[in-house]
Length: 247
Image (cartoon, rainbow, N blue to C red; front, side):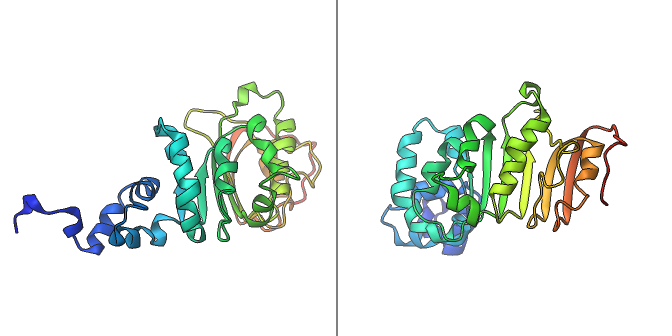
């Protein structure tokens, strides 16, 4: 065989699959769905390419976002909806993506560039996403864009954002709050708040920055009844002996 004349479609399906696995899922779906090639269609309908979809990679790199979103929402997502378990998306595009079609197996959201003022309205009663966030999402990752130095009070932020989301997402088992490197986001501060603040009977995994060592100890006082994994970074090591802990 003359290797210089080998066409991509000359490769066996297994080799094609392994090559495509090296590429971004959204690029595969966008490029090969609807090209009238039965072999490609069969390969990319595999769950590997549609279990987790990184919509954020589109918004970061594309200058034709509207056209791409139209194709995804109108044509691609309605065909792979059953396989989708996770979306990685920026909040401003979350509503358009999540309402494009029902996703019966969706349980995970990763929200890039999360900000209280532009994102929290989705986590309210009568929100268009209320059913999904309350009844389906068990794993939520918030990648922060709120700057800790611009927040007046970590205590207020904890009550209005972290505690509110934990209560609102009734099925939540996994909550991770992070930020890009070298970016300081608002920390969790519960040491002077009631015991039922930031409480859950379903959460098993928590990753978050906390304001003080006392706040860390408060997380172990029974308010998170099922917690088995706790990952924290402390901003301050001070200990307030006036706070009573139920350990």
